[in-house]
Length: 349
Image (cartoon, rainbow, N blue to C red):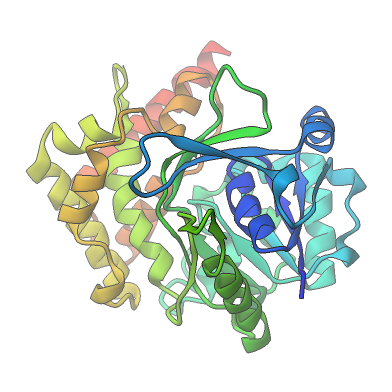
């Protein structure tokens, strides 16, 4: 049965949207008005490299069985949808029109699957060790999440790496690392069954007899998406340096043992919260993947481009580690560097 999915964010969100469209489901992408007009006129295009093929394939929404449309937030009727996917950067939810839409989503009690690196606060409330921690400082505006029931929020680790090519339209996405989305369950089994239904439908899709990379994998553990924290703290945030940007590869490989120490400390924090070591990604596997990540992280690019706010998983992990009594000087140093670079942008602007 085709499902109707609302995805907030037409850039990274178009990757999951394409997978859903391939499986015959219908998607609405929430974005700026001009981007919505472009998508409604031309559709979306996502470029993915298939196994053993030399180049990327362009998968265009107009060629797929599911239907896609796009709309600015003020035009969305939330009663149409079975699931909401949160695929914007965390600071974007403070925008007035997005906040109004979020209030409507919360009131409708729709299940929400987050694709953010920054986990929504209600999701963290589902983890007993974090339920009473003061973590609001890590969020651009923690009040955005006040109306949401924790059980209706789940998290999906946004492991696939993708970006909008700078010389292309806003409806084009290039996938650099076609790994899988790893989703935690909802509190309600009915909502988790919906995720598993989407997982099975996406898994069954083939193009020209070939498997299509980037799957949705649904796990029983609430902690699976926390495996991304080690990667973010070891690579993504360390792309931000006092002297500018560096690639994720260089952030990880310039001093591999230093990177290993950070990675393993964050892994240990996740385990102290309840994560199973089997759900975590070994450092060696991450370091190998990082060899192909030749660009700075989106966080580093945002800071370099003058963004006053970015997702602060680095600060979130610092706050958690300190409140657990397990601070780490290397993580604290990373947070301090990011703080200073953001403050520089505020002073300049």
